Amino acid sequence: MKILVMGPPGAGKGSQASRIIEKYEMPSISTGQMFRDAYNAEEPIGIEAMKFIRDGNLVSDDITNKIVRLRLHKEDTTTSFLLDGYPRTVAQAAALDEMLVEMESNLDAVINILSSHDVLFERMEQRRVCKKCGRTYHLRFKKPSVDGVCDKCDGELYQREDDSHESVKRRLEIYETKTKPLLDYYSEKGILYHVNGMQDFDKVTDDIFLVLDELV
Ligand code: ADP
Ligand code: AMP
Image (cartoon, rainbow, N blue to C red; front, side, top):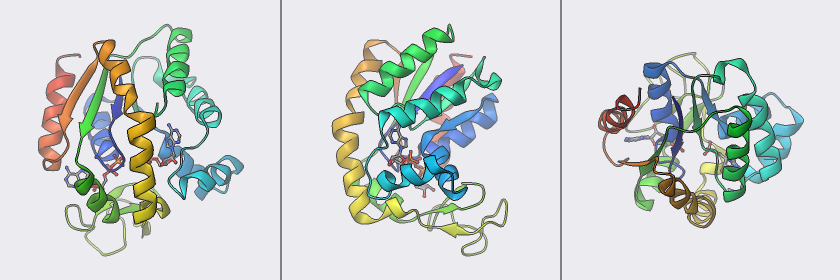
């Protein structure tokens, strides 16, 4: 099963992706997480990408397509994968289609997680992320057992620079103009499924599993 998880920033893509990959045993490919890992490892591509990420802008299509292409060439993507946060532009969707043709493959489903801007602002301001393993917390809805410390790996929790109010505003604008048009693209292919992301974590997961269980 090859799927995309789409939705505006803060909709819950990463949170749901971790549950999906556990149930269906597939690798998750999150371009945002790949950029953050590269930045934390002080790799040139991560340092370059963070110049854009910090202010809520998109990283260039060229760089982004390149890292996805390299990742999809690994063996673990032959039978299944989940893409989180990619594609985000029409040019990226076209590049992904080319990669899929080369792999003699295709997408089975695009899950679009819906949410209102009010909820998204609140979620991103309350989001904390583990520096070491990337696990995500919410200061109210998914609190770590010990303040500032990851439950899973004891890593330090931090607030993403791009979760500042100004940056979130910019990301939502970009989502509306550059990413949302992709929904029509996938709807025309007949593989788009909408899920209400403004429910509690487990209900969102149940709704996604209802869709995916039909496909396996
Ligand atoms: P995205 O990957 O789409 O940017 P995340 O999965 O990181 O979003 O979620 C954004 C924030 O909202 C995180 O702090 C997460 O814990 C919280 N969150 C995600 N889904 C829900 C939900 N259904 N209810 C409450 N909080 C949620
Ligand atoms: P995310 O973790 O998905 O919220 O992504 C964090 C940031 O990484 C985004 O705001 C962008 O700056 C950058 N990014 C992630 N995925 C992409 C992509 N597909 N295209 C361009 N930039 C991206």
